[in-house]
Amino acid sequence: MADRDPYLQPDTQANEHGDAYTDGDKYEYPYPDGYGNPDARYSLFRGEEMTFESCLHARNDIWSFEGHRTDMPKFRHVKQALIILATYQGDPNQAYHLTWQAKTVQMYRDAGLRLVFRSNIPPWEPHRKVIGAWLPVLLSVTKPGEKIQLGNEPNNPGENWGGPDVKVARAFNDYFPGLIEGFRKAVPDRLWGFPGLAVMQNDTQWLLACNEAVRAADWLGMHVYWQHGNVQDPAWGQRYRLLAPLAPSETPILITEYGDSTPGRSAVAKAEWYKVWLLELQLVAKLLGIEAAFAFIASSPDPQWREFEITEEAAALLELPDTEEPEEEEREEETLEQDLMDQYREQYETWVYAGGIENNFRAHLLGQGLLKPTADDLRMLIGDIRSSLGQLEQALDTLPFE
View 1 (tube, rainbow, N blue to C red):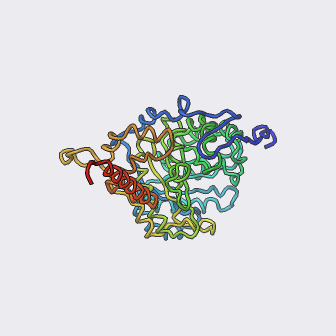
View 2: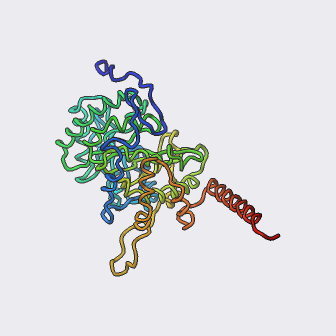
View 3: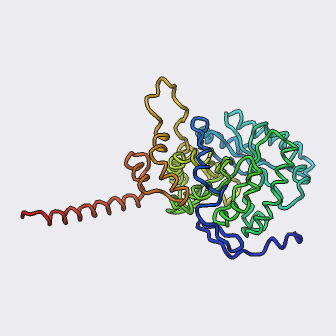
């Protein structure tokens, strides 16, 4: 790392609520060409060809076959599973472990699930060394056409890439395209993903600084977390509205982790919010190029992740209605989602720029019974009623009779 020290000087111009800075220069909204042009994002609205899917992040240890088997009933309610792989490099029993890893993965395939994989990349290792370590795993476990995320949260200090500084992001932007190119040459028929970034760790700066690296990938991973009451905060639960426009417009997005980190909140209570969050995301997923979202996590052997574990009862709440198009002769009008997009395109563009929720559109969805009202919604409704009554009283006072 000594030769990379110049990249690792602190960047003091960080604003974690959406604005991104580099060398003290602020990226102004609207973004430069290639960054979040709403019309460009509309090019990913592929109509019937794209369906947003609710998915589940599998147990975060690949070595426990029994743990994964116990979790299988949870996956009846989702379309895809995300599985973390391991190399067992240097282990004399590597072949044995890879056999069981392949058996575990096959169990998910037998359940009819499509799979996305995550391979944890050691920081700053030479490309040839990384690819050599992972090649036996990828050839024995994954299949052509499957997606593989290379690494995870490189802006997270705990992952040892150097932390959230934008200078580390620039170094990663230099490093990652060569890694992707090497993997493509070794295993040309897989889809390689840029890793999801840690929330509130300069993720906006990282996404802008790593534009070339994201373009080199086949798809982009994304992470979204919230806690307590900020599930609908533009900087937290709705953060995908801010991050998606920062990515190259042609790059598909998978939210490879999302979840509620509120301490002590039950799995079912969290999943009830997940359902609301998924329905809101489903309305704008095609606009933003988001193809899937993976709830974190089915189970874990690590106590620090137990708060996130999704029970089977909670998993049932992750199931979304089947979005397959009906037969043409049975279709009398456009689907609700398409109709809303047509009516509210201007509001969608406002969302993309502001990274927030357009109040009029939200009120419409509440009125149609498509969203569950929150306490804030009810307070706003009461305020509107009081305001209307006040206006009525003033109007009565002006009438020419007692």
